Image 1 (cartoon, chains in turn blue, yellow):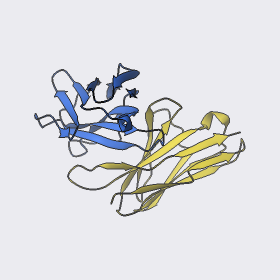
Image 2: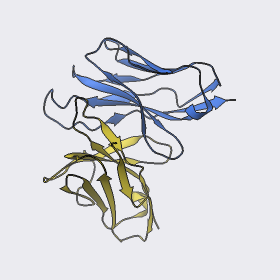
Image 3: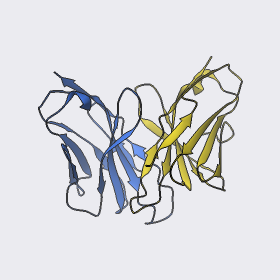
Image 4: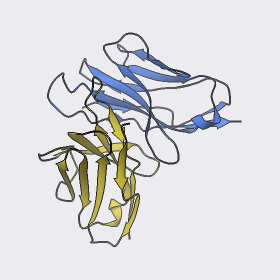
Length: 119
Length: 116
């Protein structure tokens, strides 16, 4: 079974600064997807960024970027120029590639990191 | 595009009653939907995978007779919590998979269930 570990229950950063959220995972599969989701107080899950395991290039989405280290099974999220609206719970998630074999492709989530933005 | 709705957003029920939660994909067809449960200040746990026209696949430890899932159409899946007890109180979130190169899953806004 796959597991996702987020070792930082809470992180705090000054507005406009940069913060990195950590995530490690364990899997025996070679094809999969990794995600970072944001969950604000409204509880609506919002996709922040996606990484395909077969791609060596790290994904970026505006102020958000990842450091994907496949051999180390590490997938950290960097948020640059932090804004007050970035405050939320952030979940790292794993999803198998549904075309690479049998089995469902529901998401496996880490426990989350509560990100606080200090004005 | 890719909007998923859930109804109701909040429900309070008495212990022993059954509650039905609906998950709809509003602007796309979803052959597969997923149901997650989230305890307060905790992560999301996958409960089951719902496939249109077939039986749901439940994760280990999830009682299928207690959490009945029906996926009768390509835009609707329902989760029925039968004979609810206070320990079933939780936040239930569904997601729907849109067929594409990424097969991305889109989340509903969730349903807060409180069992008295």
